[in-house]
Image 1 (cartoon, helix red, strand yellow):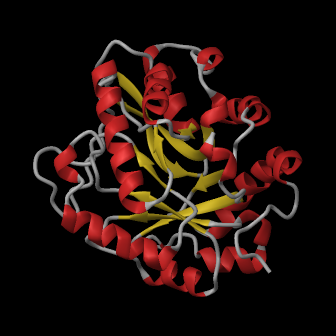
Image 2 (cartoon, one colour; image 1 turned 180 degrees about the horizontal axis):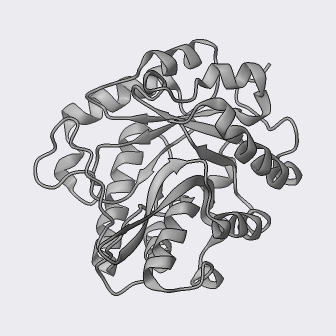
Length: 293
């Protein structure tokens, strides 16, 4: 399996264009004070917007990255057009990411427009899974990097497959690794009235290369209750339980990201400390980093 050859990055953090300017986490400040919490930076990228100053400073110091796309519907071949791929390759040349990843859902409806940023889950059918797999193979071939599809968040899911069964089908058809977002999974299981670990028994954990952990917010409107994927610091209890269950059972796990980019550093430290304690037996104090000195 190709994912076995990917570098081990350990515990990392996420960012996207302008997150620091909105009062969020400064990646290099976190490194300076708590280097074990920021072994790599997952950079959320809209190809048209490019990379902000924080991402460029991180790269200038020779630090490890991954590229998280925020603007492509992988199941639409027309999305993987020449101009978009050219911009993606240009950003890859700067970031030198270990791999590409991103929510495998609908980032836009209709023609892609800059800043649209609509994110809906995919249609959970075998036909949709195979369309996504084709897009993953195309993007991987066009960039020379592994592409890890991520299970997106959502409140309404259409299709006859369980979310985990769907992404197992995607990974099998694409022969790819997976990015398993545990906050998104917990939201799905709650909305479906299922146990947090429903579907895990048959899920190919050997394909899980990366895991996301993030805080969520409980919402209610006119009697309808839901969980919002807020990228905050209040992590659901079932997310911690899932993490503790999955980490020892995912033999090719290379990276875990705490998605908390729009929170000031002091508010994030309790979450990072808990993550580090769970991951220490797996990654140790000094995870292997590409180009580390």
